[in-house]
Image (cartoon, rainbow, N blue to C red; front, top):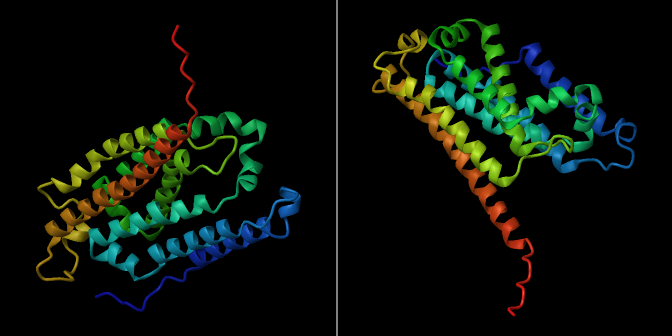
Length: 269
């Protein structure tokens, strides 16, 4: 059964998060004047960044990880939603533009970043990584091998950074796309993600053996119900977040169009 008091404290997890937090504190604190003379401490962004690290730890270090790894596909899907739609968003929103510019403004990297930050490429990377990892053999391998599971989660986080970049980019060299383009981009990714949802939701078989033979936490909640619930969480979680961001983009697009000055009409002859 689940050990509700078990929290992961492995050196690679705790040490990695502490290292990221320490590096962020270093470059936004003592090294800030060297990187961006005159820049003020990004307090609001720092809060978001550290909240992102906390959410990431809660998703992979709390008992939720044990639930998703050993018992419930639906629990695993909740874990993935936290990584991709909360931790990754907070991480990007926590990066000051002057800090990102130290990488994106390098002339030798501009071509690479220009290609990788294109919305089509960002959406393709996200869709491919997320879909391929849900192939039954790969997905169940991750459940059986701790290091493969870690690799899966790191790749999900990285893919989410690509997904959100066109909408939340902190870079002045490769800025966010227009609001109209954001709406098209979000719609396109939702459509592209439909096949993996349909594959899981409408399968007549239990796709992942780990969950098929896992101890049942609830007598009336079998592997078939769990698989369907996992697919629903995947789709509804993604669509829910997408809908919120779509509405925000539409509202800002509408505001921008309303505030745009109109040319005066020519007087009739």
